[in-house]
Image (cartoon, rainbow, N blue to C red; front, side, top):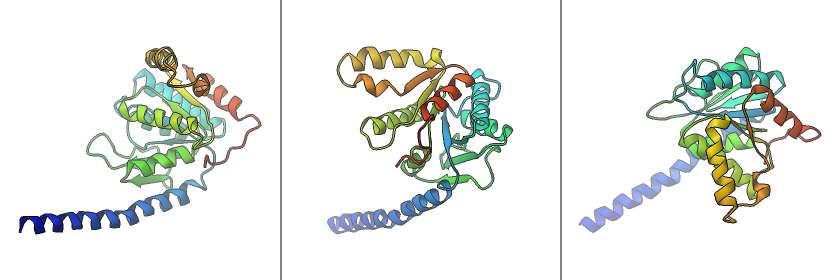
Length: 228
């Protein structure tokens, strides 16, 4: 009897997994349809815990504002902290302000600076991450936690393996990122686990002007199309 119940439960799980594919597909279709008409954008990542008034919050506002003034839209994860700062900067500049929201048990709620028609909701992290990579012409990475590092290293991996086109990855805040970047160069690179050219697109900046210059220099004479 127990064995029959066990198999019945397992079959139900497998059936639920199969039906989940339709929800996943729906998130992809909705994301592709809405993001494909937005135009060139830069994604800004960073901690959801960074408060207004913090130096990196205010720097993210200024960076997003400058990027928007240079003609790019801004994409963030749609929540508080650095995400809010990024959308706020785009909003202040009158630029495109996109929020890719994720349903989380803590931290996440829509910030008020996302354009009303450009707020997308996702249940699946992996679908949301595809949208960031496919529709971004650059990643601006502010100080953050594990989620920020996840986005950073996934982008580097996809570029390294030629799964997506190259785009600039800018780490903002040399004091915050120097230790990690030194470890990558002095430990990973020295061990032969990465190649020197894998690090070419990673830049460190401390000002909005530096960020815009890096992005504009990279795209001089290049196409601003989706990445795959």
